Length: 264
DNA sequence: GGCCAGGACCTTA
DNA sequence: TAAGGTCATGGC
Image (cartoon, rainbow, N blue to C red):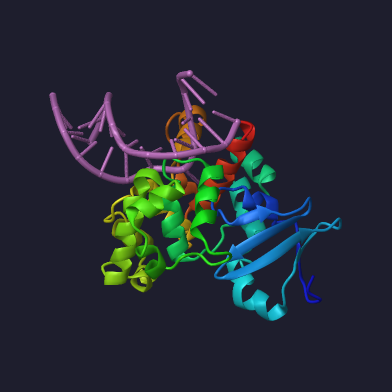
């Protein structure tokens, strides 16, 4: 372990909940109390100690350069949770209480695009396996690297019918048809409609990319779990107007809690 | 062994 | 606009 380390109180931060919240696929449990995180070409061990703290095993410089932003550490999730509780919605209060340590990570945009194209009609353990095969150690393949693969190469990894989507979008980035830097400048609505122009990105995947890759926290992705919640617990309509600007965070608590209730 | 998975897309009507 | 079929693969 490195001598330098960062401590984060566990009040609004739980690495295990984050790892299992379905927004990221490169955090893995390496021992009973430690998780390994890969992002932006770096890797980090995060350990829960017995004192209600998380220990990030990295230097202060690396924390400031990479992990502070990645974990959205500047954001006060306690305040967000208070705002959600103020809506007096019993299900949401229970969801926030259960998933108290969840955060919306600020992930790499390209990685988020690729992983959420892979995620469609797929289950989380398998998504993790495929992405692990796609990566070279801690390095996620950039568009140039991914574009070198043929559809057959990608199908051999287990991508199935999604292989051609990845080939296409890798080439779109290389040709400039899709500019990641321009995407980062767009507002939520423009970013979603831009993303949906590409094969394999529909409404749900575009919203996930907006939320996890562009940190558009007003984005509210609706997958099969969210549909189930809205239909079974909210009579088919969920009003996000109550949570202007942070509906995506609400969505994350709901998703995580409902899967828990279902034993997943 | 059948159902399901953080859906998208195409064809019909 | 809405409904229904199809798409790969493997977890459970």
